[in-house]
Amino acid sequence: MAAAPHVVILTSSGLGHVLPVSELAKRLAVHHSFTVTIVTYASLSTPGHSSRLASLPPGVSVAALPEVSIDDLPADAHLVTRILTVISRAMPQLRDLLRSLLDSPAGITAFVTDLLCPAALAIGKEMGLPGYVFYTSSLMSLLSFLYIPELARTTTCECRDLPEPVLPSGCVPLHGADLLEPLRTAPTPCTSS
Image (tube, rainbow, N blue to C red; front, side, top):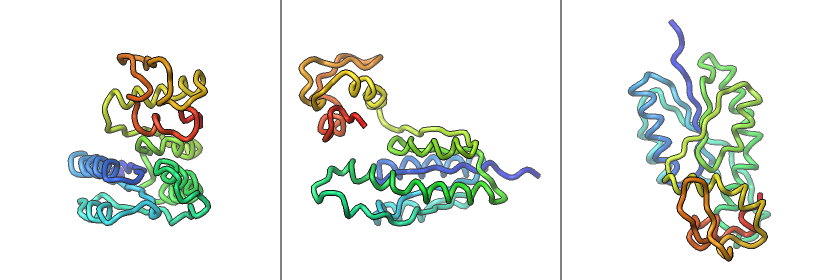
């Protein structure tokens, strides 16, 4: 008998990320007989995360990447900067975890990240894993994020200060002040990173 497909899902912090990921994991396990490992960041964990993740059905396990230090960031660093720094610094531990899971009897059928962790897909690709981004926000939000490279290429000011509306593909024109908060208030021009 073939082993059940095993999906690894990497989630960033915040219940707005953990809740949809845990619901996806639950559905994959209950309705499709998959096994699922949800990967979280110990550095970003909260009691709400722990409570939600403790109530998952059989077939769903949780692995927390070890704490990483962000003590070198300024005390007033933007929340998004803090989260992205933790995600970036935990990549070596994620690589080790994926290798370990890949070498286990269950293996890994697919690697899924949420919207703040797509850089991790490169690690999965190195290992030959099919990778996916699980995006649970609005279409306008998705189109705004997909427009970031164009904003970074064509602007030199913070997005909230753009003199003319921008036109992400498939959207109505948006003034810089109407873009998503992380884009509006990014510390570098239009999140040029």
